[in-house]
Image (cartoon, rainbow, N blue to C red; front, side, top):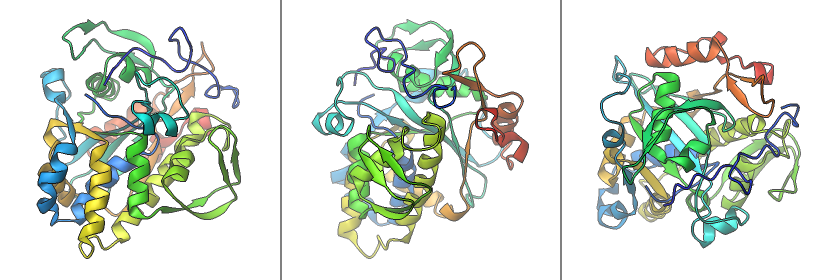
Length: 368
């Protein structure tokens, strides 16, 4: 898949500020977005629940696209956790490649993609819980020097919008950027796109979410009243992508919906008797793997199943979701930067595989 340096929405490639700024108050191959984060993590639990999915190997194994992150990044990386804990970078891209992705994304060009949804999922030692840290797409970061797939080198740059790194250089550079900003070693990478998310939710039979307030978003076509709703794949995609229909109209408001949907999706999968329904398990696994990209360590059905089984003790009811603490940038109020010292405290807790202190979750940009 192309990784053209295509920033968000302007003809000259510069990041667009429409709908993501403080106006709200100031404020390699297949890909996918919004929900993908949740989808990718879900897939792991999905395969974990179906411990007998090895018989699906010959049909599903070839669906998964692998990216050799270790080879691309070399040895100059943060050290692994001092425990048996694991860190995953779960990414959702907004690629319009393919007819279904283009239609679901509202049209647009097929080349290039941005990582509009990103979470670092920390699974502590013992696998009894997990925490998902959302990184706002409008966060300004220092992008390290990275190598493209063709061997060319992209020099380091400061004040780069986080979601543009994927388009400019590719997934390995996104991993390197996250490791540079956090000093957290990323053990695994998972990515999914529009069509994969929609198909997965439909294969599950929909997901029930408790909508926190009325949402009337003309941009996404989402029209929901406050209260519980059973959403199909198309509605779920619109739900996790909506910005203008919730909160201040920014990406910061949308992150709350994405995190809520993640937990609802995981709970839905855990509640279904996939072992008692091999046909349904096959259908769900097929939908998920068709649009899944992982690091080479997880790029087979057996590897995913083994990893999934190791996470079988993770209960969505105890999974914690937080947003990287951010503050509005003093030079550009349409962008945010990691808040100090809160962000540093959060990443330190993950590096040490310990509970994140409440002080590290306060985000000046949201008044938290």
